[in-house]
Amino acid sequence: MASPRERISEILQTLPPEVRLVAVSKYHPVEMIQDAYDGGQRIFGESHVQEMVQKYDVLPKDIQWHFIGHLQTNKVKYIAPFVSLIHAVDSERLLREIDKQAKKCGRIIPVLMQVHVAQEETKFGFLPDELLAFMQSGAWQQCENVSIEGLMCMATNTDDEVQIAREFDRAKELFESIQCSSLRSGADGTMVNGQWKTRSWGMSDDYPIAVQHGSNMVRIGSLIFGERIYV
Ligand SMILES: *Cc1c(COP(=O)(O)O)cnc(C)c1O
Image (cartoon, helix red, strand yellow):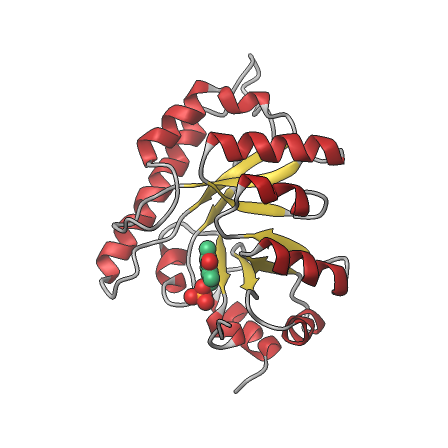
């Protein structure tokens, strides 16, 4: 099998230049991450707090660690000092906890809001209407130590490419409605905190569809590192 760095360079050749690649390294050893790093990759995604902290401790400090999984509020404090993007904010409570922990660290933590567009009970996230209402409410503006920078979603795990495309389109429409209606304040129309810019969707099986349907950040794991071995 090709090495992680070889896989990454193959994938990068298929991605438009404006699409950022998150190499999802969960369950994979630090040696494989180091190999990808040596090839130039700097953004890595993890979905378990303890695992991400352990890897952060031993790997080069210019890695940008993205937390991509469901994050429990009581664990935010462990990653707040160093995480560079939290992808899956799925409740106002979590947003407030990230804000609180970021304040303690003297940081502003960039986050994405997770929107539920899939037809699966198990996926977390705000429903599109809920999220639009939340953003329009302006309640998030009190969280001065988070920078809300976009949306994250996961499509249904299905072979039906039309359905997957439709779900990504739904997320893209929501991204645009929020951009038009919610993020402006004050006479000059500038955004309150951060930049609304990131659309995180697409994984190993569906990233080509995601890129055609509005994604500018893909989260790819098994295609780079091989199958995960869950122990
Ligand atoms: C594991 C994971 C990925 C990567 O999945 P692959 O199918 O291995 O590419 C992407 N996003 C999230 C949220 C994940 O948990």
